[in-house]
Image (cartoon, rainbow, N blue to C red):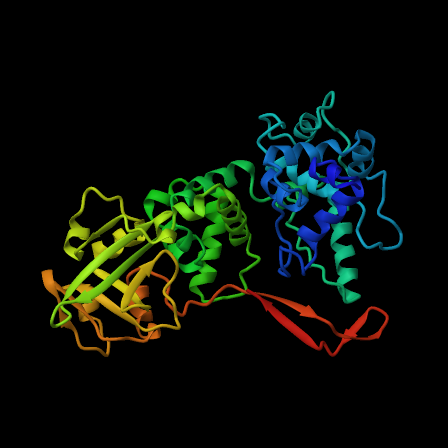
Length: 431
């Protein structure tokens, strides 16, 4: 296939199948090795899976849908067509199951009804609904067995855990495995836009932020349910959560937000603090924002009291919250400068705590001597970032030593017989 065809979205059926298998089913692909218990078939995720440069969400949906023919859809979803007797590199029918999830996941082109058959017909621009869907659940079970056989042969594929079909004995797997819906994704995207990138990327901080009433009431039921399960797992200190349906959705949205023009640069910020005076008890602050955070041109300079009292500045949410609580944690930088920025607190540099008299930090059992500054503020001595883990957690921040989420996959191995692998020579954690 030519580069022109690929860039225009005109992928062949075989190429769609291959790219979808890599994106969703392979344990060494972007979805990781966690069992597949949900499938994000929203247009945005299909656009990502297509690997077509610059394609939009709805363009991806259209390109995906138009490569199907009505006869092949009816053949596979009705059960008239059956999986090949011998396993190939790809299932050959997985794209039809992704289509069955897209019917539930999209809010564009499928009408307003919840009837699967009608929505499928609307999505494909067919005359009337698709009535023959007797084979959808059977096809999902065939795919689960196909992945099991591949795994038994030592190939890197995810295990598929199908939800109970309920009363929908023909299409229940497709309806219940599809998460999120287009509306779910759109609603969570709007919420995440209001949260800083540093918070969005830290699981503990994100669940704390989303628990606030100004965010929680905006979450759809399906997202709230996924968040509740994810929150319980995070608080139980589980780490194998990289493939959790909520975190996968957050990461997918985060990738899209980061791609938007100029967004990462506009959200950058840094607060520099310098100590001066005869007794080093005078401090000067400089705030850098947006492009200025990269171009080294301060947008504001002054004292900590002036910053806390300023009404002319719209401060980053994290900085405003730190000032409200009266605790700034600053990491050591070059040129006798101490800094706080939009990324998490570094664990490889010394820190000092700038605290307002009477704040929680001053009464916290830190092994340090406090030195008085101007305006009722104090500064600690140099501290190890690990020593303020409890304080950070109490203040609603992720601990400096917060554990990243991981996933597990195996590499290499020793084949001892047909479909048998022993003596795995290596494994890796995907962080």
